[in-house]
Length: 119
Length: 119
DNA sequence: CCTACAATTCAACAATCATTGAAATGAGGA
DNA sequence: TCCTCATTTCAATGATTGTTGAATTGTAGG
Image (cartoon, rainbow over all chains, first blue to last red):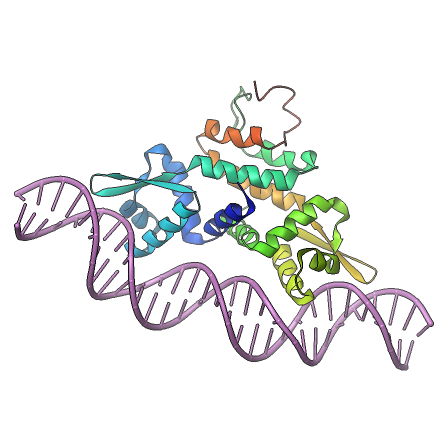
């Protein structure tokens, strides 16, 4: 992920409605949610949600698929992952020890973490 | 870090000049750089760099200190770390295996990861 | 105290972004 | 085909954000 893509992603996530949509879709998992359901969940108009969904899609944070009459959006985990990697490279560059707390904090470890987080 | 803080941080990083400043300061390390030096490095006017520095400070991405006539800014590693943690919680929530690639990708590992992680 | 320097503040303007409601597209079902 | 539903597109408007140059604050040295 280059700097330009990262900026686009940051901009997408900096807006209240859009950030809520992303969090919603991450929780929804691979099944995703229809545009209309998203609009209802975040309480904005259909045209407005469409505007934000397009922006998030362009930023590589979500991905659409058609299913019958609906368009289902789901989180783009690869895109989110790439953004984290970009941020970690910037944050940790030359200072791995400083960034470590973030890793410990998130309950997200590579498969090497046998025991579950969240005791 | 709550959602509002995260949005402020994302907004700060979504602007070209500001993202360049952050990357510059991360590379500069704890010593930091004077506002004037930053302005020169990113090629913007003093008043403009001041505007962006204030924004980054407000977002918790950089921290200032006075030193003689200069004001030295350095990256706020804690703030950056918190943002990564926020993003990882959102991204990985319930899907740790999906987020793992980001961890492997960044050359930044917690000290708890003795060996492996990339079997 | 006066001057020089580093940085910030301020007001004005330009540019970008978000919201709205109406109209258009596109997929199914009768 | 016709009708309906789900979503998008469009144009207009309001709200935020970024940029500029001049004026200001604060620090240090002569």
